[in-house]
Length: 585
Image (cartoon, rainbow, N blue to C red; front, side, top):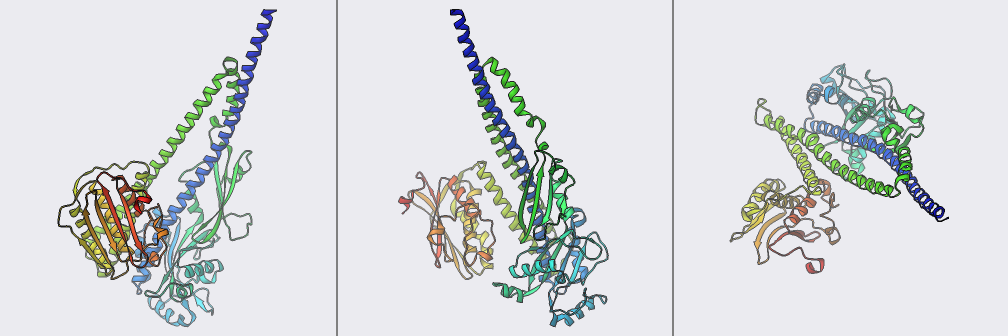
């Protein structure tokens, strides 16, 4: 009986261990099933993010092309069709932007000005006429057009007669911003069905007031327009990261859903009908026009090995339950560790990918543009006219601003990844500030400001990284210049106390109120004020400056009064740390 009782007791223990372990594996199998479901959704969302990123990048390039055309029309009112074609031929659209069907300029002509306009255009082209004909209050005929692939150039078509184009033009003129139309059919044989969209950028008469919609309408000179084939456009986005288990359908959200999408991948319907597929409709706005993308992912968007994991877990869990109940907990612990490690690696990989993208896809082309424009300005391409030199200098300055923003983004990415290492050395602060002073003198003179450098009589030196400290001070001086009105003054000074080296940048600009002083060093923060519209920036300059000073063991103190000016003081303590709020007060 004792032996029988022991057998029963052992059986109970084995059964209890078996059942407990099996129950644990059942729970674990359910967790794995949820993980697979989450991984499927993650893969689905990743595909959507890829499409979104590619879309924004491509549209940014389109906007640059439009603004180049706007600059051309603003600087040359005597331009011809040949001039327009020659300018845009340099973009090599057929190879670099095969989806772009044409870039044009549409002149805004009230009815009273129509005879003078026709006389002007027919002096260049006797066959020029406005289509469709007829009397109306306003005409917006296509005046110049560079079309791809190259065909007979069609000018004179009045897009304002098309309700879809007219809505986009009116919105662009009223807001002053680039505006996208709904999908339309292109004229002149490029396309016979609604399969394109057009982005309009308004061009205003120089010197006119543009503060209100009415003022912008009164000052309207015309529109630079860029037509894009939707099929080629979306196809190029999808092909950047092709996946047979991911499809999408692209609709104009401001038109009735008639079942006919502007664009639909070939696998969309089949994926939608697969059991276990994921489908999501995403409304979004591109340049003031509403669109909707319906994305679908089949279950095969994740590998079969991933999908089979729940069943495999149950099978091996049954075997492991017979051997040892505790194995399941070891597996859970191991899996959690591996998942956390995998997520950390994915985050780091994403940061590395961002740095790589910024370096190769943004910085490299901008650097090449800088080199070629610089060579042209130096005469390597032959003698330039004064007008050509001015246009190239404008392009060079715009490219420099773009490179500056790219560099700031790279520095922020390195900061966030902890990849910036200071190389401190004993540095003559007086000499460093003098360099900043001379570098910023040109900018201050262009704004008719006075820039002073109050140089100390005695030497001032500190242990800093010359490159990064120079960058920080340069950002502060540049910021003071931007937010100081014309005829204002900025003073740069330094001194050495018993506890720290101080560098001050004082201005009599617009100032900052107390509440906004708390957020000026936050990432991607730009303050709204009367000068904000005239000042370009990425909202990371002060954040980057503050982080660099913090890496040096210092801090920045701000004193400012709205309407009277601001003083930014950099403290580089010898031993002390940044004071608390009470100590500062």
